[in-house]
Length: 501
Ligand code: NAD
Ligand code: 6OH
Image (cartoon, rainbow, N blue to C red; front, side, top):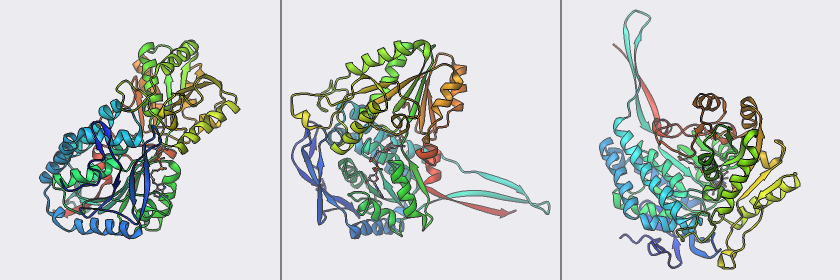
């Protein structure tokens, strides 16, 4: 073991004792002059102190990444690179319990969710790009020249260079590796800035990188906040070549401004205000279960969650009552309990934001079908950041709670009378990340799905992912697509070569 500072912080039984989570620069774990506390959202306790990288340390990370581009890493063959990515996936799997415990402690998400979704997906992110790397082709054209001869055009991929990766707290390792894996697959080096709320798993991943044999400087981690901290120092750095970011739309806009002067490519996966459309001919029970999942998974803190549910009038009342039942049966509780289905929100601040939306919904005239407040446990969980799963009806489509992303376990359910109206209500938003359509008429499923202005539409399912498919949003929900070859295209520069034959 190489003395990873997170080692000993977490084990399969959960958090054991407070430690310092350090930055990882040029293959070494390093502390900083300033530290901040990493809190457990389930009870507000301090899990660890985190070293906040200053401008010089961010610079050291970028310089290490730049040097790595011209060192050993540049000589690694495609086949070897694919093998290294596989070893990273194996490294995650061999420390599965640690990763789960670290993610659960940082986020408060149920252990069953972290074990089923977050950590397996992190390993899968490395595997899919390892496989793709070996098979991805490139375009070539045989061209007729004006003088009747021929030329051959073909493109080759080159790394972008040093990629700055900034990620949020809701699916920390899943979203970080969704960007790190293709970036490394394309031969880049990276400096990652995980969310200040969830610094642990990015740091544990550093240990995996070391042991897998990823050369020093290829994967660097700097901890801190956004403005006037590590996030901004990274995006302002003149020697990064691209920024890939997942988080709030407003933060995306701020990052875009920062990088605009040096014209750097960006890939943004941002917020959503996603619609679910439920037709009267849906498989009723399956759909209620599917919508409950789409609204409440990860306490509603998934960018793909449905916060607007449109239900055909003929089944509206029955559907609302069935969803209410589901919401009221969800088991809120301690994240490490296997029966817990819903954990807390990420922070006191985020809970205040969600509760302010709950208050506003009532001011805007909503009917509270269920929830709307804070649950009481009579235990230490009362110091955590829990809110009740909540369903509203009765709001106008222009209400702020129907327009703005809340990012909590909440939806507004509204009736519709026909397909055209459902499509038009779903599209009446500045966001455009994801949607779901629930019907047993597949012709209608295709027809409606093709009219929704989003990057991903699911029919009779939600968050069912094939990692080769394009993923991203339109409007305020993002710029660009990642996934499969789309990721390879973002994380590499294409150099077209034209040869006169
Ligand atoms: P956030 O935008 O507040 O923070 C995300 C990251 O950006 C953090 O690491 C933060 O420190 C950093 N950051 C903040 N300001 C910055 C700045 N000025 N310069 C550089 N870095 C900065 O987002 P969050 O609150 O962590 O996550 C929740 C949001 O993320 C929601 O809006 C959600 O919809 C969105 N999200 C989107 C997707 C997607 O795939 N589209 C996935 C997950 C989350
Ligand atoms: C947002 O919270 C979820 C994003 C999911 C992905 O980026 C993915 O690849 O599944």
